[in-house]
Image (tube, rainbow, N blue to C red; front, side, top):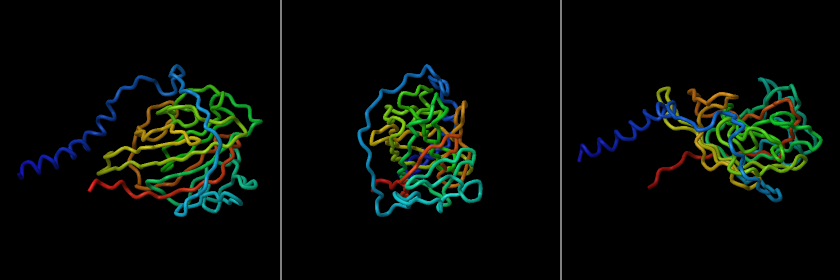
Length: 257
């Protein structure tokens, strides 16, 4: 009986210790940002609509938003508030929440202006980062051709979206994201992060395992960090519009009882 119990305890420990090594040794069919990677099918997402739940932390109000819950480069956020929208001020830098989040559900709406000239990654680009380092891409992807692991709904540089549900420029897109952060023990990765993403109500990432911190043109890797971190919105030089952002802190996943 004691031997059986001991072995049951050893198996998970061995699995945890071997996870980082397995991650490093994985091989991949596609290069990062491979233009030959097949594009996902296009899906019409239908109409938009959203209401914040009662337990949500409001990051941008649905009406009369402000930037009081955000910071930019250690000082006040410099983006513009225009009616019920928050607009990237190109060149002012990224903004991030003052509050830190671990496991979280995020709702945020974004729009690429109709008059923007977009080509690939240029003209209509931003991103939503969790823990200040894991990016869900924001991009004009309706009729705009780019590498598929960098289009709207992608985990940038890692996974293309399951389908392309991006609306045309001038129309609002809606992200609903569940992000489960990584776990580190003794300075090593014990459990990777995972993301489930709905774009305009369409599932585009299904509990996808995050391979590491977002990197451009390079394979993602993990580095140990705190158990919580800010949510960051990217200034990529384009005046992307955001509105109606809220977050819900999630409890750790409970074991079956």
